[in-house]
Image 1 (cartoon, rainbow, N blue to C red):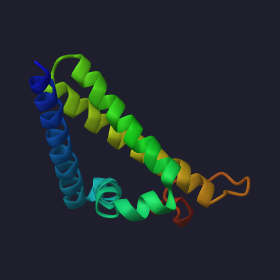
Image 2 (spheres, rainbow, N blue to C red; image 1 turned 180 degrees about the vertical axis):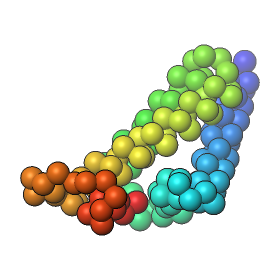
Image 3 (tube, one colour; image 1 turned 90 degrees about the vertical axis):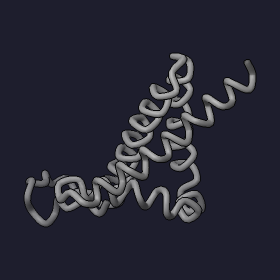
Image 4 (cartoon, rainbow, N blue to C red; image 1 turned 180 degrees about the horizontal axis):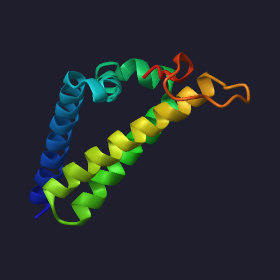
Length: 123
């Protein structure tokens, strides 16, 4: 039984990783989701740099991903663990990017209007 649990958790992580790469690659090819794909791919491809520059953010994102995996595992479903882990991971990464962008570019009290050069996100 112990080996089966380890195999199930490992399979969930493998599926999650594949989903992460597929979401990143697919998003890069579609115009509207290009920024999403860029962020997802950068998290994977520049992992060591992210951990060096932003250790707290990286730890929070990984913790959220692992929590999603664990909840799916508790549901006794490898697929649920992978899907939930991926969804939580992508959501937390996007939220942390949004918070980082807000702190990086203070608005100075002005309201930004959609469609202007001021509202471009760097992610």
